[in-house]
Image 1 (cartoon, rainbow, N blue to C red):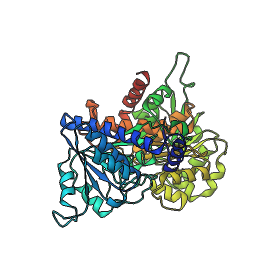
Image 2: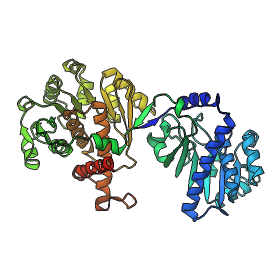
Image 3: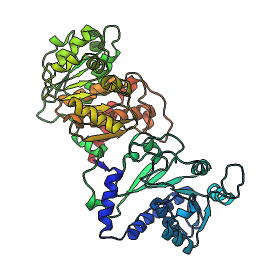
Image 4: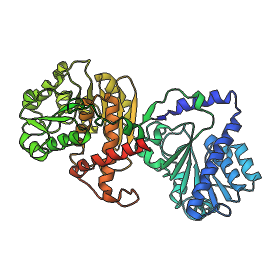
Length: 504
């Protein structure tokens, strides 16, 4: 897993590092890494380094200092470097002196304006003629969007941007964006990823993220968040072994859909079939439709007739009436792990007595989207989605998978996984039904619920990407919108891809 640390954790680790390594030395390490990666970007976009132009957008504080020192290193490699100072009186003194000694220029952001924007002519020229721009406007202590002068400078950028530590304007803790922001092509960060690199709009604005070791590793605590990697998911994904049979691989029960709306039943059952090679038992009024689409599914008309299962996936399309309530109550009373989605969540919100049917020692997974979260908790989902998921997981003693382009998976003990889809192809009706079936199958196979949700979320988003790009399997090619049926068909492709990563 990749670790993700909060700004407070990083700052505390830095203070421990500074006790044995002078802060200026650490800054130069960080700045040198920014310069190296900027030179790589220059080479990629211009086929060279010497003679190219780099503009530094420099704010107050250490992030600006990192940018200035990086400019000094680049200047020594023959790059023309101009620092645009957003707060000249607060620019990092040592970094500014180093840049000037190396032959770089520094100009104020504001001054004699070429137009009505207030941006100085030299500053505008530096940004507009640059081959690459380095963003050193604000650091981990900043909050809120870019101020007008910085926003105007950023608006003029038409070349790749390398951000120092984080793209300016992104909230470091939540990844939220509420105004003008830097859209980086590459973010060079130090010691470890921060929440803004993996959450929401921040993940998009960060672009490619390079983590540089500046000596913090020995001082970092346990990470606040974790990101699963394809190889570890592929290595642990349940596949049949020589001694397995259909029962030993896990039998999952699916309670979904209705006679009028059988699609949820077909999608959730199909996802469970595609996820593992065990057995799927469907229970509900769409039995005939499910059986005709997935003949390998053992389909019955009610949960009472379903037979023995190792886990349940329940909720999509069961309705909010008495029959839906009875289905959910039966499943919760079964003593088996449950993935409760869609109508199940609304039923639990509407009727708190349903919670009494659950054995608190048996795992429960809740998979709300923002609207279902609001119904379940009685309050709207705010910008801090991690804190919200944690609070609900602790309150209900359940694993909570909070849906979104960035999926948050919180365990009752406070552990959090993050899965950033990096695309929006999953925004289609029935997508959540597929995810429910995947989670249910993994629970039945014995995968720990928190990890089961993380594995399923990753394969779900990967399948969406593969389905959108078709046979090319090339994310550089333009994708096309997909339906949930195409997503479902791509699940085996996604599983093969993660298993291939595990064997690489």
